[in-house]
Length: 173
Image 1: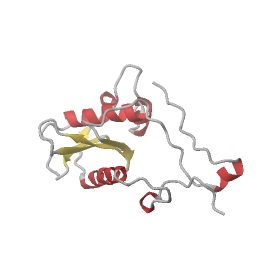
Image 2: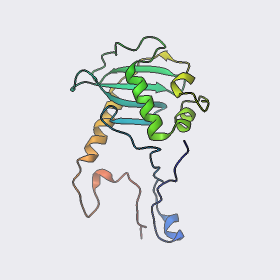
Image 3: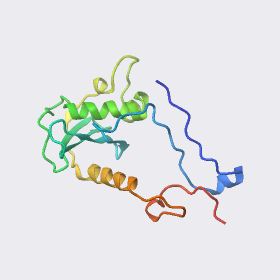
């Protein structure tokens, strides 16, 4: 499983490219279904995401693995602890979240972010030295809600203030 070529944004001449700010977008390694794990990211020193409950459509779990120390955390968005997480043993929500992170970012990138080495046939979770380390769910859940809000922004021809943090596609001047 290798990295795909980044999506390049055509900004015109090389001079234009030097005067623009913007980030290179990276294609997902493989397409993934969003029903079980609608949100996963590598951020704030954690692989973190939101996982749908298998039993209650109104309940979601916020799961994370810290890069520094491999602390495992899983709780509802209301900070109720997951009953399946026990000490160093990952619950099904953490497993699903890590599996989707691997689909989204690639096994090598997730392993590198978590500072572990994985063999050709091993999984990221097996390479961790995990322990239970509760983390507040509010920050991750808030990022997920903000992510959902961007999907509801109506189509527009001009600049959209809510999306100003995306890099510029034209030169100033």
